[in-house]
Amino acid sequence: MIETLDDLDVEGTTVGVRVDINSPIGDDGSLADDARLQAHVDTLSELLDRGGRVAVLAHQGRPGSDDFTGLETHAAHLSDLLERPVGYADVTFSDAARETVSSLENGECVVLENTRFYSEEYMEFEPERAAQTHLVEGLSTVLDAYVNDAFAAAHRSQPSLVGFPAVLPSYAGRVMEAELDVLGSIEETTEPRVYMLGGAKVSDSIDVAWSVLEKDLADHVLTAGVVGNVFLIADGVDLGDESSDFIYDQGYWDEIDRARDLLDAYGERIALPRDVAISRDEQRYELGINALPPQDDEGALDIGSSTLAYYERLLEDAETVILNGPAGVFEDDQFQTGTRGVYEAATDVETSIVGGGDTASALRSLGIDGFSHVSTGGGAALRMLTAEPLPAVSALENSRERASE
Ligand SMILES: Nc1ncnc2c1ncn2[C@@H]1O[C@H](COP(=O)(O)OP(=O)(O)OP(=O)(O)O)[C@@H](O)[C@H]1O
Ligand SMILES: O=C(O)[C@H](O)COP(=O)(O)O
Image 1 (cartoon, rainbow, N blue to C red):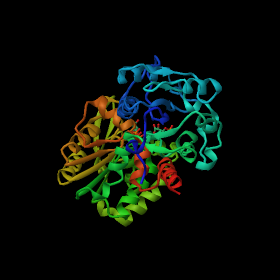
Image 2 (spheres, protein in one colour):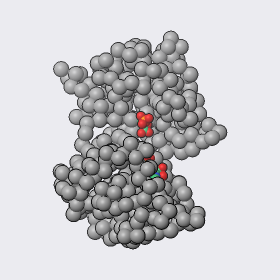
Image 3 (cartoon, protein in one colour):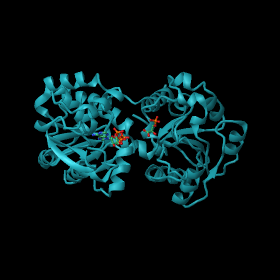
């Protein structure tokens, strides 16, 4: 059992709150999607309303990427969402950071700088070692408690996620609590249960497929996107050079063997695309599996309409559906059809759970809503679906055990 905000005596307590507000950033540096900020409003408002002094810790992007920015814009936007002033400090654990945090009054909040501006935060550690990093050693001296609300980053064992629970009383925030509640109890959802695995994270998706088929959690696994293409090749379909080269270049060639093993073991429960959409003369053009490879080796960029009809039929019979990743290159209007169709059909299923991250922001941009639960986490949600422990969650569990010893 993990302790939650219900177990924390907040008034006058200085709390370090790790959130995941890692967001798409527009060309002008603005936030292109604020869903992850919105998600943390309940936790932050509750802590502030209950008289907490809140220091927010978060990352944005990865070193070297275009979206590796500071958090000043995030702080300003959080202030709008929380409808109260939110400070910003361009430091994280220095003397200046500690002074800023120490001078907070009850009900005041400051966002500290992107944790990944410090090299240790982009490394993975065991919790005890993470507790000895400059970030955790420095900042924990001015904190009374730690709250982890960053479910979407909980699959990382970085210092700001696993180090503080080794030295401070630690609690799950409301986002973390809700995500663990839903994603941790999928086996209690009603059957028939269908998984739809799309997108481009082929190894992770095959891990999920193994896990849910082996444990009999899935009545059907529907494959789409690059994941579907890998399964088609594993099934002996020649998709043509463009799709094959793409899979090879992404480093997923070895996954074809794993997909074949899965088809051998559980083929009757794995649904493969029956047709695909390619781009020919800049138009969407659909080809049945028997008509492959395409004459000019064009890439398979979406599932076709007979696959969509087939998947819609399987979803009609489902009581629970868990979806991750798009069915095609949804960024291009011509190849959104599969993603739109599958996800819209999923909203009619009694319980529909969407693994989040970029999928969630794609659905918002396509204007599709009405799911039972949309996770804030992409990689973290996938890891949870394989029933693998999440390091940041284990750190919270161990913190409680330590406190009760
Ligand atoms: N058939 C395809 N060929 C090439 N790219 C594809 C195809 N189908 C989907 N994609 C691409 O996959 C990408 C998304 O894959 P990914 O697995 O990263 O999903 P995601 O939504 O980003 O995941 P998460 O929600 O876990 O963050 C999109 O950019 C989309 O264009
Ligand atoms: O977007 C995510 O999945 C989380 O914020 C974790 O980010 P990362 O994959 O860069 O560690």
